[in-house]
Length: 430
Ligand code: SF4
Ligand code: SF4
Figure 1 (tube, protein in one colour):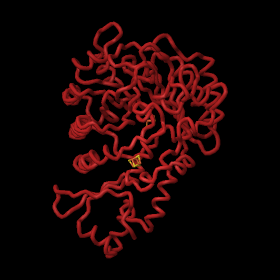
Figure 2 (tube, rainbow, N blue to C red):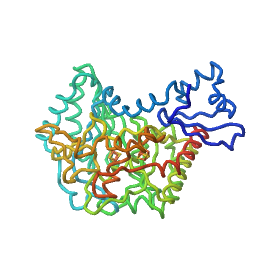
Figure 3 (cartoon, rainbow, N blue to C red):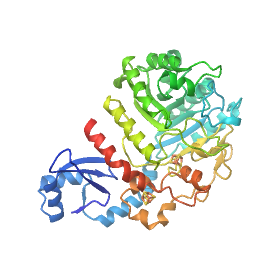
Figure 4 (cartoon, protein in one colour):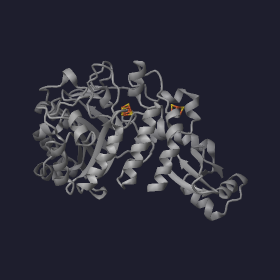
């Protein structure tokens, strides 16, 4: 047996005589005695240790085969993926006037029509065949709950269709949360609503400055009331966008949630991301961040580590470090804009050259426009321990930085700087 190529080994000074291991391909964290690790290298493992370490991806029979397997991982995932996932932007309208909203001039009375929704349903029905057993829609906006009627009619139709085919249908919402009253949740859960992501940009005084209603009034109290009255019906994820000058204030938001009874057992998870810098005129959904993008700036690394620790310290859930499956690489995942134009990633909405089709005419080949598999041309990726966590990084970040997709967004520096801390947080709190 050999040590896995996709293993990070860290000294573990918190526990003398032990090492901290992280398998980038399995996302498993292992604390191991130094002498056991030496036994691997000497070929002197006990059968019990060998079985355990094999199970957690620490040792493999053949490192070269392991590398080949990871290089084909995206293709294998695509072949086995049972989920057909569409992200649907229902409108570009909003009842908020967020300070950092990127929809800018595009924002307004732009809604998906019934005719476009009918074509979308037809397209989904056509693709929901063969091995696909799960149908998942993420409803976005603008503010998706301004299109409540359409959410209900699309869901009703697709839920019935998926059930007829022996599959399942579920949907999620990325909403500002202001219209998510208990009655709305009660109507949507039976139709398949399984999760809603609501953004809180800090404690009341900060949030209200960044995310007021169009009228200028603060929205914080409305959101807290809505979260309280719906968190027993549906999983709620809380997101938040921080900047350099306010990231420390997110700690008081966490304490406020606990004080108000919105405790870890009531919330699906919490994750805070930096307000992403986007080029002028960028019209991708304002709330689309989801931590796809990594960042090398020292203050951002420190802020991310700090906020993750504060979340975990209070026993809230937050996403684990897992292999990335970018929507662009996922051949069963698409973004449909309100006008029916299809993209591969919400961040590319409206960008010339990145539309991949239309709900009326279907999906075209996007291999070249999105530079699929670009990382395969790079020897350093083929040998990189972080390959399962990266696969060439985020194309949108590359696009912002270079204006095209001809380069990779190498996450090596970011992962070198953060992974050890994130892993130690996993051990300490989970
Ligand atoms: S291109 Fe980037 S932003 Fe878009 S889905 Fe992939 S990782 Fe996320
Ligand atoms: S882009 Fe960088 S971090 Fe990602 S796999 Fe390639 S070398 Fe590794």
